[in-house]
Length: 334
Ligand code: KG4
Ligand code: ZN
Figure 1 (tube, rainbow, N blue to C red):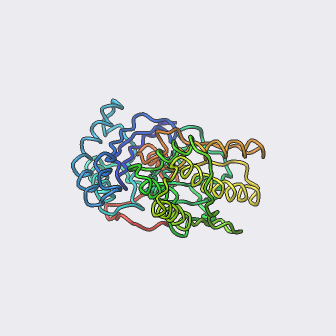
Figure 2: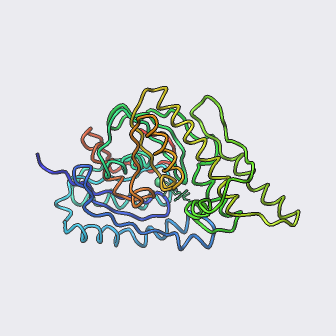
Figure 3: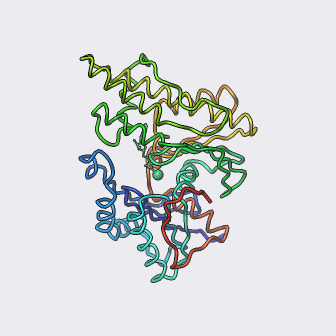
């Protein structure tokens, strides 16, 4: 069978990325330009600044990706593009680049939902086994998804307010750790103990999550201690916060696996890099005879290889977009 080479483009937030993936599983090249250094002075991503940098860099990133792959556009089968959700201005930059390439080189245009991309990041490590539960934990999303086969997404539940990564970033800001806060809180937590008593977020029978109460509890605790002239122990605060997050994520995920009689779990998104979450899920899955997989760290945060991997399956299913394709900010995964 002829090999399929998908060129993926991702620009939904603050990473400008282009990748080429062979047959949905094999990375040929994956170029990611992060704007973290630009946004960290603002404590978070500034949408207008992000889109301007995407405009400046997108052509160079696509050229570099082809160069690293030692390929030409003629050898590419189709172009996969993140059409949403994300920052509209940022999404549009990647979308217009993808449409232009599709038009000039007469290549099919494949629309890919950003969350499908995060899920398919796991396919670059090992082909997905079905049925599976995907726990998506990123800066913008927290979702539990059931998949009975390729490209079939049933949302079991999601966050009712803040995404888990967003909450990590806000807690890091309270502790003056800088942006993005997730990796920093994760490292600090490793050195501390969960000594502070924090609420367990939305501990009910649903598969939904709510992190804003936990975030407020951390902020209030920090302010109270400050007003009382007491120094907060950042390591213990990070460990306490991380324990509450990991407890609820693992509890609801394992319940979904049990109730739906699913034995395969994949974890996706930036927070999938979290050490404590990885360790706890590995332990629990081993105890229960489940298989769990995580993307390699390179594929946890936003990248175009995951979009190209998802794009391969969308391509096989005949999904195509034309030049009227627009960006969306909506969450609906399909
Ligand atoms: O998937 P991603 O690149 O962006 C979205 O699609 O939203 O995820 C970025 C998020 C940030 O909030 C960052 O703080 C968080 O992932 N993150 C982590 C860790 N590494 C990145 N959160 C907790 N622990 C980590 N080790
Ligand atoms: Zn993402």
